[in-house]
Amino acid sequence: MFLKSTVHRCLWLLPLLLCLSGCAGSLSRLELERADLEPDDLPGVEHVAVTYFGASGLLLRRGDEAILVDPFFSNPGLLRTLAGRIRTRPDRVDALLPEVDDVSAILVSHSHYDHLMDVSHVALTKAPRAVVYTSRTGTCILDSEFSRADALDRLKAMGDPPCRPEVDQEPLKPKEWIDVTPRLRFMPLLSEHAPHFRGRSLYGGTRAQPLGKVPNRASNYRKGRVFAFVIEFLTVTHDQTRVDFRVYLQGSASNAGQGLPLEDLKEFDLAILAAAGHHEVQGYPGSILKRLRPEHLLVSHWEDFFAAPQKPLKTVRGTDVREFLDKVEDSRKELPKLGPSRLLAPGSRAVYPVRDAKPR
Image (cartoon, rainbow, N blue to C red; front, side):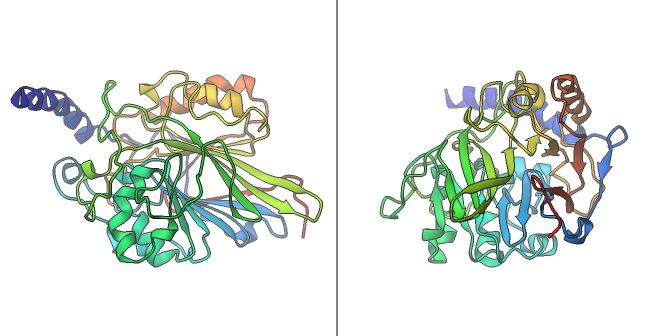
């Protein structure tokens, strides 16, 4: 039985390996922005700056309010990821991540290595104020490093109790607001992850006990629960709380109806949607765009994250990014406010004025 299951697994992994080994695509049909905009690019105007790091890694900042999502820089190669040992590359993280010592939270959309692997190094050495919000599976995977650093109080589980029952934590429920600061909050939404190849998924499942070691294989990073997020930048006065900028963020493609925000959340300034795996699900991205009706769209998880950062950019393996953008265009006739679809090169920044922005 064991031999039969092993052979069966290898038979479907072989075409996956063959595809991934040669399926990184050209940028020839894509309009890629390599902008590195500083705050002075919108002089005197209140704005939110979004920096794209690659995969689903993002930094969202308004003034001194900042939040990180899925920071990932190490980019182990394809063969090492599928068959060898992987690890965080502190040299790459330190070289590519800007100053984030004022970041208040790190959100993790799910626990695969390309979303979670670099989080410990970022949180424990670069963002000492940040609380990490992940699934219980994520807390179990990160437990060893955070425990060794005596920082388990900075590791929060969404949707389930934390990995260690002795950790005192208020329940963090999906579809409820979590206050990061008085002027920054987010809402986790249960979502799903597209299959990787012809309906098959790698590294699924959950963890309910501490892993007990620093993870060193991609298979250590089980998917766990999958979340999308609504993030809001606020203005708070003595008599009201006003939403100045609302972001919807999804770190993996999902079928129609998954990861949707609450019905009373109507106005979205920015949607950030992953391109990878869009062809493995139904109704994406059109259904979510029609629900959000955003003013701006930023595409994430579009580039080959098996390539070292210094290598020439190519598109994510096994996914036609141009086809994803064509699907957006097919939905555009029902989205009169939607601006151009933007693809940022890793390390680039886009700046968006907040609602009713006025010169300071």
